[in-house]
Image (cartoon, rainbow, N blue to C red):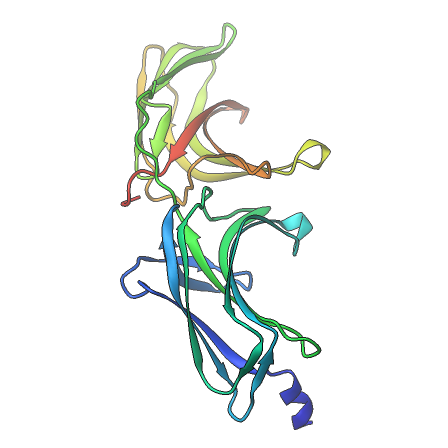
Length: 301
């Protein structure tokens, strides 16, 4: 029985360490098993380097047909789980075929790596970056080890950032005008605006402002759309009167937002909407939705 258990144990231990692992910022990453681990944070065009150590289990040698490390950027659709689409794939050969008797360390480096998309864990899709170490073996089966890392990319403030002004109403019953100070917001920004009641002939009970995220995956008949309400902010409780003005001041930093992603590798998009909800005394609901762009500003975001 002990022999059978031992047959499934790996022949060696593989560890990956980054050159600047002690000084580089670490961020949480939720794994498939639900556990959260801390992994290093990179941005596009950075160097990714470090060392890979391979240590045979005591008393064993590792025969192999070569050792390599790959840097992979992958998109996985959850309705097609297990099938990864590689949009970035770089490889470095670490060792020629041979045998390893004791701990052996191999340096690796990927220079100015183009990583155009951010890491993302969504409802139906995830985008991940990983270092994959493969010890190729014939009959015994290859040994693989994965080391995740996260990529965030930053945008400068847009030179054009117009305010949003819209009117909404029900003929002869309700006419309101709302205004948001900008159409593009960074992740730590504040949404400032006003709502004007120009005509009120229905009894409004309350009014909320919601932040909604819409994730679209796939294309054509295979398109999946998921909408989440990330925040709900009460603007008013009670009936407004004609001529009244309600201020809006909504801080984005408490919420787990990502930047807006548009058609990432023709696989998925993530968009954000401000949704104004009015409820009357008969519990009828009136909506007005407006898309806004979210971006990541500087290294502090």
